[in-house]
Image (cartoon, rainbow, N blue to C red):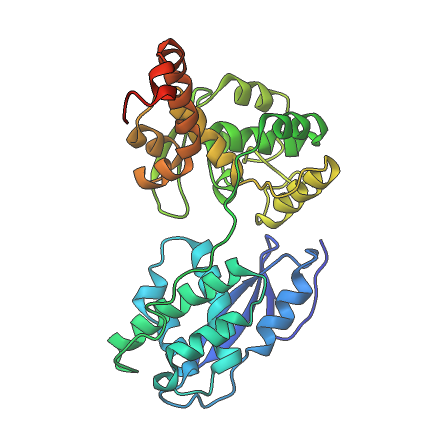
Amino acid sequence: MGRIDLKNVHQKKDGRVYYRKKEAGRDYYVRLPAIDDPNFAEAYQRVSKTQEREPVKRGTMAALVAEYRGSAEFRNIPSANTRQNYSRYLDIFVQDHGNKPVEAMSARDVLRERDKFGDKPGKANNWSARLNTLMKFGIRRGYRTTNPAADIKPLPIGEHEPWPREVLTAALANATPMTRLAIVTGLCSGARIGDAIKMQHSWHDGHVMQYRAGKNQTEVAVPMHPLWIAELAKHERKAVTLLYDRSGKPFKSTTALQERIRDLMKSIDSFGYSFHGLRKNAACYLAELGLSDTEIGSVVAMSPQTVRHYTKRSRALMIAIGAAERIKMGDVIPIAGGQKKC
């Protein structure tokens, strides 16, 4: 991997890249993709454009963002990935509205700004959610008394679909060995992709994989399916992690693996399926085994409510199968003849 000399860009010895920024007299660092990542140039351009000029005016969005970045609320966000996601949208707020008074933003302004994301409802919803958090913070710090983003309902977006049997079969047959291991890892663990790339050999004993989920810091213990164990045995341990890139090093971010999955889906003419969909496959499989919502949640690091949402279609099918024999044994004539009322 090469090195570059760009203003305010700092590259660590392990390859991690950061952009140093200054707001309201404070320095902070924004994580960038690796320098050989296709998304590096776009990320660098975006973050460099949001570099603030001194001084930051009191009461503006730039001042609020700077105060939020320096707060305990922001520093104590448990997941580094979540903090990075927040930072991305904080940069957008400063870039688009930095000099505007916080108290001047109305609900109408929020809706209009959100609509600028066009056909990207996921990004629009993230923008609204991050603004909602920032405005709550602003109320506590005296920037304004009401929250213009409080009642903005999320836009509908497509769900992460579980992979059907034919898609899963085709994907496993056509994937490269490491991508195949990644798919099996997601399928058998139900882990998020950010957790999957961090899993280490020292975290399991060949029977149970134990790790802490990055998003909610939940302690997870996953019984390892024989398929997962067999797939692991096919690979040389080039890294401390189960999954590694083409150079034999742990994945630095989820970007490369996500790109591999997208390319794989394109090659087998199956679109709309992501690594996260395997999380639903895992939850549905456990539901079909008869595990409770709490038991499933402890294995795949989900709340019982999320488990019920992810497994709703699987449960509908299970109920239909269980009721099939009783329905067949019933007498349909009275129903057809209208002699019985439901």
